[in-house]
Image (tube, rainbow, N blue to C red; front, side, top):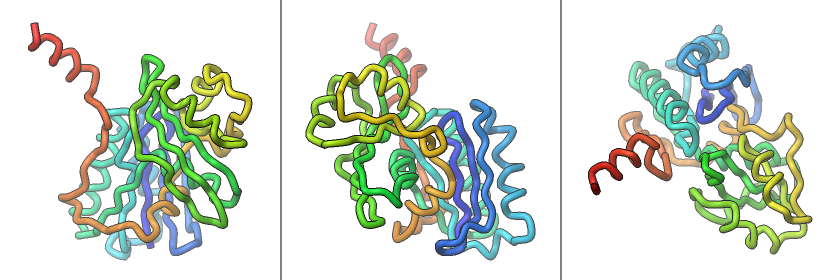
Length: 223
């Protein structure tokens, strides 16, 4: 039985899953209010179940919003430490791709990294399996536009999907339907299957690049 959590972007969600069965899940798209909404959501999902009965806690460790990723990872670590539960780190971009696990397609998962850059990865979905085509990266749209031309059809999904789609300018790109566009905790649980379980102490956020404050500090130190 796995508790899966996502708070890596503008949406937040939690799900309790037992193998392929979703026991209960919640999803909210209310902006970055995760410090207020995430724990109550987890408690509602876990209602009637004890945390000690969990086999693992799966969490989107990034990339995504610096604040959202920190809140999610800290929450997962705190819950895991309390009951000595192992954790599973899941890429947010891979969780997005698992929204399409019942289709045959190529998914371009994109999250808005600001200044017309995106956190991005490509995945091929076929026969109920998700194959990663590249590593997670922070990249400008012009740097992966040519890659997408190699595919007959590409589904653009993630919180940066609409911005990416509107500026991509390729004929083979399709904007994902809104109900499948964002990562959710059920897809986090699916992506966590067969991944390594790690101690809570080893769970770390994955940012891909420095925060704006860190970049500004670096510029000041160079002067």
